[in-house]
Amino acid sequence: MLLNETRGGELVIEEPFAVLFHYFDAIAAMADETTGTNVRNAKYGSKDQGKDFKVVHAQHLMEFLRPIHTESILACEKYLSNSVPQVAFDMIWYPLKPGTDVYVQLDGSTHAAGAGSDGSWLVDLWRLETDGSRLRRGFISKRINPYSGLLDLVNLPVCPVSIWDANNGGERREKILRRSTTLFKALQRGNLLVDYKGPIKETAQYYTGKVVIDHRRGRAESDINLPPQINHYFDRFHEYEGILINKDRSFYTTQDTQTRLPNRKSQRAGSNDAVVNGDELQAWLNDVPEHRSPEMIRAEAGGSVVEQLTEHQLILLCPDALAYGLRRKHWMMISLDYVQESVPSNESISNLIIAQDELKTIQALSNRQNSETRHWSADFIEGKGSGQIILLHGPPGVGKTYTVEAISEWLHRPLLALTVADIGTVETLVEGELMKWFDLAEAWNAVLLVDEADIFLERRQNRDLARNELVSAFLRRMEYFKGLLFLTTNRVGQIDDAFISRVHVAIGYQALNEETRRKVWSGFFRKLVRERAGKVQIASDAKKWVLETAGETSLNGRDIRNALQTAITLAEFESEEDPDYDAALVTVVTKAHFQKVLEMCNRFRSYVTSIRREDEMKRAQGRGDRNDYGNGFDSRMC
Image (cartoon, rainbow, N blue to C red; front, side, top):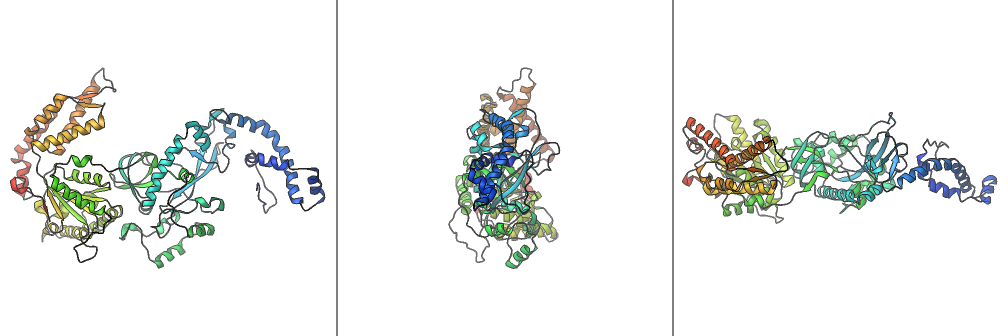
């Protein structure tokens, strides 16, 4: 039907009469149905009078439209038929017929704007948005500013899909399908570990590193504003309304009711879902203002989880998602255009300075959470002692933290690396913070690392009640943690006995010797070749000298990393100072660069030792922190 009957008897269509010219051919076909009989029936009345009136009126309408069509529309169609379609600003409305699929260039700050008083066009659009459980149509708008002459349609911020695909061979379409498939996988699973290198939406910041896409949890725990969803149901859009993709939520988390959601920050739940009982849910529903039409609620009431989306649904899926930055430890809105699915890696684990039998033990315990097999628990209390706790102890810079990072890459699981700054030291708040991190680790099956955990592990003393409460709170929560927990410390001798009995495996690390130090250097050299080939190169004599003199220094792994980075920085600085510097040339790190850096490092170490009269190993033994000599090194299963 072209036009529905209106209850006022009058329908006003303003210039440029877009709806009429979008359906010009249909109106012309209706007008051509006229015959003499039709005219008489319309004049004198008959059973077909209603139909004949429409024909006569269509004729009158065509008399009005044809001159405009000849003058404006035919010229517009001519430009649109060019090899690269073009359009004048005043005719933008013509190729943008309502219901047309379009590509939109968004700048990360798309928002609805008022009608353009400056003469600009404001295009209303919809796409598929999600709350983490369902997909629904969401509203956005895009402004097209005035311009003169003709402009290629593909250079406009809004361009029909058919025109763009014909212009670039479907390259953008394939990119959109790939990113939407990744997002749909994350929504189906609940969360997905990916690599991200791109801008943080709504900010001027940039992020590089691993993130966990978890749109549902992000909506509940972050204060990031999301675009509004369309609240009215239309039957012709039933394929795009309330598409169920994840059944884990027991209620909707729409924007206008977000403040009424149960606060997960202040309560613990046994799964990754917010949990309320029936009375609380009904009270919540009664308190919610009508934000969806009855038709929409009925349409979404049933249905099963979809296994896959159609290609058209994937094309329309919003490219933004809420993700948790593992490095920055906060929620952010990311663009799926900059996402790469993370894959398992054995590379880091092959560079570990650790005995093979100890590595196998760590791998076996770490892989327990990845296995679908139901494992037996020796504890008589359900839920207690079902996690895996691994203590890594030894001097600084020997690879304790790196071991955990390598294990998380091997397992292909998120790594939540915490320090005392993330947990806090206020005894009344520590337990709540631990609950938050433990919940997150269990929900994502993440590897949890508490790095330099000494303040939580130290022996309790009668005179320090505040610190005793910190230790007790950590003990309580640790015992009921169901995931994989790594603890690292340089002061194993100060650990409270209660912790020792709760650790499944303790792995001791020795200070680096000549052989292991050479292995660390070689590992960094390989990494440099892999990541900076054609940009930075270590001279062969420099590499040989570094490996031959590895036993003459007392550098640990962190010192070696810093020394290499400093030597590279010196070489790059000297290259850039050269008047004939060419950025396309390879920067060569020479033996002289390494000698200069290592000389400064050794001179500083000697100076510190002369002040303290003991090296770090002797000081640690004197304080009772650890014994790095002989039999002091120990790895054991607890």
